Length: 362
Image: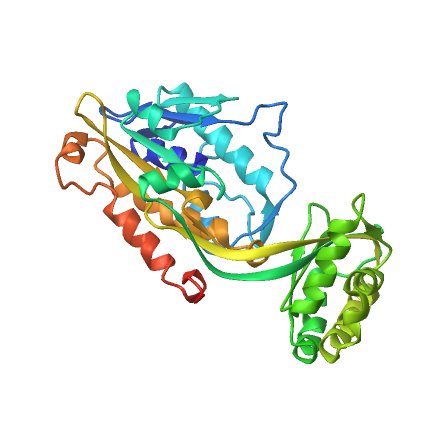
């Protein structure tokens, strides 16, 4: 959401360099942008401990739209991985510069139950939330139902190593490559908020192993913690670990222990799925007969399993197409049959044509 706000503000700004900074002024007919954020400064905003995998293309896209001192671009190091808090804080700081120049405002602590209610005094409402909001009922009424594609049961192991003891995740990936084929499972390593932490995602669980893990995790009175990956696997998989496939995984977890040297491992079971919305743009007739638009962006529109670490990259590049909407000649967007977000919709459908997004046969 913040990237869309920065993108549209910059597109309609005049930038001029002074001896100390880049000065921002608002062009005539520039859209007024109001960002409504449910979180508050003391209630979750800027506190998400999530590390993102960032591509060089995404790094370049962000830096082209962030000011830095007297320069109209920046050189932040987002790739190959960075904290989501870094991206969010820089985008917030950037948008607030435009807000001070009259482009709009950022309001924290704003909870919106019905996005269409904002059309009373807005022409376009961008819904930049997660997959679970808006509700299924709201989505169905708007023709924006969530369609689930490929979905796998995944065992997620969060680990903490002693400072300076564990090896790097990059080196670990090379060692795992030769062991994955034997276990017939897929393993993904994701970096954590510190160099000594991270997550191991295990996919391709057999039905019996998944059932054992689900029973072990749900039956625990409190979150279970283990001293090693091998210990966690032995405890969670139960007697199913005696199968040939599960036995192959024992070698994988032994290698993880040897290289990452965890001191604490916790586990949970989750569905790792691809999803997308049946539609992402809805033309809404307001009570006075005028027209407004609801547009889904980010995870509200589509997403991939978190272990891939690439979902946000796609969102940045898809929403870049929103620049093409006729923001300074909005009258044309109100006409019957108008498609002001055509380029964005086309980008979206190209992305969700990928195999993983296709609904699985029942």
